[in-house]
Amino acid sequence: MKALLDRARSFKRRVDFESGEYRKLAEGQYPEALFITCSDSRVIPALITGARPGEIFELRNAGNIVPPHGRQGASGEAATIEYALEVLGVQDIVVCGHSHCGAMGALKSGDDLSALPGVDAWLDLARPELAPLLDGACEDPSMPAVAQLNVVNQLEALRSYPVTKPRLDSGRLRLHGWYYEVDTGQVHELDEDGSFRVHAA
Image (cartoon, rainbow, N blue to C red):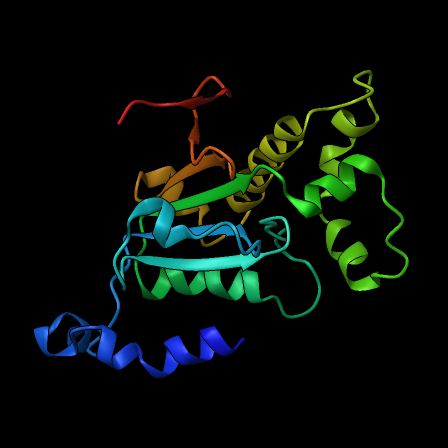
């Protein structure tokens, strides 16, 4: 923690605030995309995309889960999605799953999460749609298969939101599914045929 604190204290000296780039951020934000991904500390959206401050609006939680529309109670996820689209005018949403994901690993392994009731309740949102893969004929689903199916499922959840449907129908919003490999740095993109592929830069 000391190293993090020291870097925070020296941030103003390490960054050129006089150049105007950072000062301009105070005037407002105009991100190009909403990036929905896992809270995992190894997944760093700005590092993966090379985004500069102000270029991506982030939504992070365990397992990059988008709660179904109409779920009872307040939802930070729903609020972030609404704000990104209605206020910031974002035209692209990326849902990015990743390898070595603890949330997907727990679902795949059927871990006993009784000591983590909050985590268990949260993962319940993803369990039903993953059940065909977790409980089906495939006795040992690979981690990529689980994480990638979860990305597809969360994109479907996004499509159910009233704030996204008219934008998708009119072509004002594009959804993207990504799968990031922590150990290789490769980004697999969801193609129209439902497959995740690595595309040449």
